[in-house]
Amino acid sequence: MDEALLRSLTPSVLGILVRRGATFAAAEDAVQDALVEAVRVWPADPPRDPKGWLVTVAWRRFLDTTRADVARRRREDLVDEEPPPGPTPSVDDTLQLYFLCAHPSLTPSSAVALTLRAVGGLTTRQIAHAYLVPEATMAQRISRAKRTVSGVRFDQPGDVATVLRVLYLVFNEGYSGDVDLAAEAIRLTRQLAAVIDHPEVAGLLALMLLHHARRASRTAADGSLVPLAHQDRSRWDTTSIAEGIRILQAALARDRLGEYQAQAAIAALHADAPTAEETDWVQIVEWYDELTRLTDSPVVRLNRAVAVGEADGPRAGLAALATLDDSLPRHTAVAAYLHERDGDLATAARLYVEAARRASNLAERDHLTRQAARLNARR
Image 1 (cartoon, helix red, strand yellow):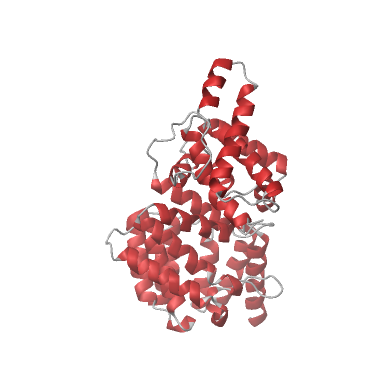
Image 2 (cartoon, rainbow, N blue to C red):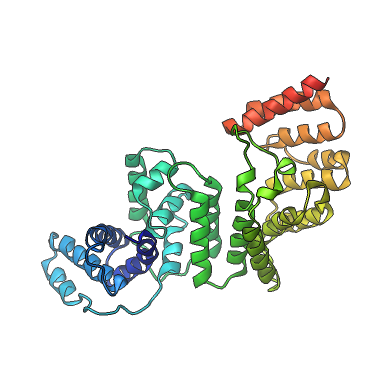
């Protein structure tokens, strides 16, 4: 059974049912029933037209469900609309599904879950395992999301920025369970890039590829974090880096700069440096200036302070850091690093300990604690 084929057909089949009059929730249930039937039937009797087969079976499942309702007259009309056998016209509704799943009325977590379910074709169990929550909890979240968007017109214009933000959230979840969400985000973004010509879609895809290329070197054998400067660059995926840079260059050539293109440009400069010492920090600061102009994000300004510390020295970095709110996540960790670079090991060790207490996850806490211990051992 070709699961990849089933997943690739899911958005288009779902879109056809919605255009024929099914609500989003009813269409999604019918398509899932059709996929289960395909898993049962296709190994012994594969169809000549897989998409047409799925549309026909899903539509019949929808009609069977509709017949259980009280609107008998409407049910009879729907029966007459059953699609005829034969090849199904090639109409790709993937883009509309992205916009529907990233509807502004949904919370970010609900939008991510619905995107993975409806566009990604993942099961509720897979999504629940990826987010480390009970399957029943995820099922309720997805059901609420479907109810929220059930009355939304399928042909309403969508917001590309919202769709990209949802995909960015999926990518940042990384890997946690039996579904690699980083790889899934790349797959979905490739899919989006195939149906919409937008430089920021290309920028996000390039950013994902460039970050994902370094994944194998980000942790040591014992699970501890490895900072970028100490990563084994021979383990970086050069094929993904080359593809990411190629996609980025094509996007930048269109002269419609956006935040994902700027982030990808920074990632490309890191990926292009043979060693950490050869990193072009001056150009990275320039890209952070562009990114600050585009987003005015405190987190971007925090990362810029690190880059300034590398390009112009740690005291310049500390001066840039002093203009920011010290309650920002990672602010204390950045201060510790810059003080260490400046030779003030006592202050750096104290700040590493404080940053470890504020860390949001165990891996980061362990890393910062090790940094403090390393400096205390040198004093």
